Image (cartoon, rainbow over all chains, first blue to last red; front, side, top):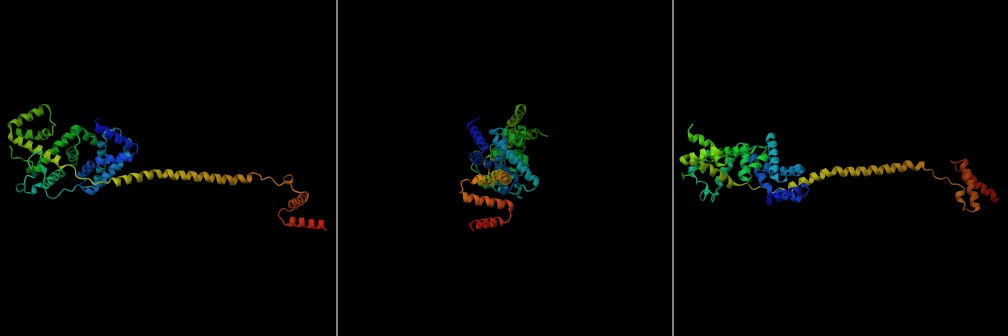
Length: 195
Length: 157
């Protein structure tokens, strides 16, 4: 385990011993990722904030049962995923996809959506950022979950597999299908003239 | 199905590094010869790059809400213990009070005897003996005190 991992495990151990200050540090470092994960599943910001709070409260209450201290992030996502699933069952949560689809816009009339050149130096325009979010929203929930965890939160495939209790191969397969679906959705934004 | 179609079914897997061995080599061989599939690979890679750039949305800082809920839950868990403690204390106090009330009549108060008043002078002693005799005869009447007073008057006469 590296230094960050040691630090994380120490914080988790302290929180498990009842130190609320240590838990606050864990909240601060993981709250953004958990919120993004939930928000992309339920769509509504207010509900996402509510479920994020519930995730951390439940995590605090369940900390004594956490076995692998270093797997805190995956465990936290599992709690969040369970809460999201319960919300979906209750019917309160629904992902609202905007009526406007990319197909209805006129990509030829727009700039490529990138300020600067491909690839690394580019900064996303608001329009392209919206297009990517729309493409994300169009994915099926299982694919969207792994894309958010992998691309937006930077979680490795093995950690995602642990969080969702699936095989790493399943995660890879969902990532690949999601990539193909999003490429279709983003169409003109990602097609280049360099070939 | 054309060769390009078959390759493109695997291209997203290739783009994310999920292909290995023979499949990977087959795709790479095709890509070297096919500009159209190379362009498709570029589009897939750009899709991934766009996702990396979007990043997570800014999340609201609700720590005070989380902390408040945790502390309220802890207080709620402690509360029954506190009430149980008070109940135990009250029960103990009740047992003591009832015990004292029940025990008190059982313990006999020593009856006043002549021996207990040996320090009184003879006159007082005689008076008290007369009073005790009157009380013994009529414990519930004031006649005892009246009789005692009459005896005193007769003595003086």
